[in-house]
Amino acid sequence: MSATLLEQIAIDSKQLAAVAAWLADEKKAEDVRVYYVGDVLKVADYFVVVTGLNRPHVKAILQELHVRIKAAGEKHSRTEGGDDCWWVLLDYGDVVVHILQQEAREYYDLDRLYQECPQLDWTKVERPEIPPAPVKRAPSFD
Image (cartoon, rainbow, N blue to C red):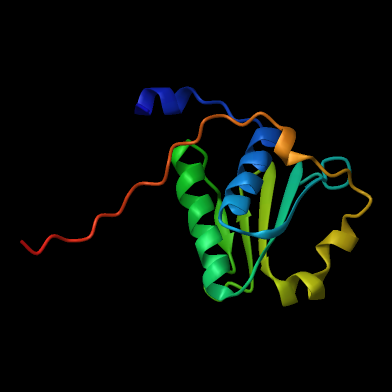
């Protein structure tokens, strides 16, 4: 996919939330949920909430979302919690992604906090084509 074509991909907030959920699911995130919070909070339209099994798993989910969504032309303004990977937050403006370890998800209980918000069935949202992650090649010692 050329850079020109990437620039033409227009991802609305609903599609971006679905893409983030899909990518997290592809990385084996657990309990993937997308909440429409636009009517309750004025800071975002969607919260994507996913669980990683441990620190390396949260880090892998974070890396996948960062690289793949950036390749599609979307950038997050900041990453919070990326150092300890207990609760990582990616802020894409209208979409905020929360990647939490199980204990953090239980402790902060975002699902209870936003239980009144409608959940998006992200599996039924048409997703734009997302470029694959760049392949890292091992150094050649020939």
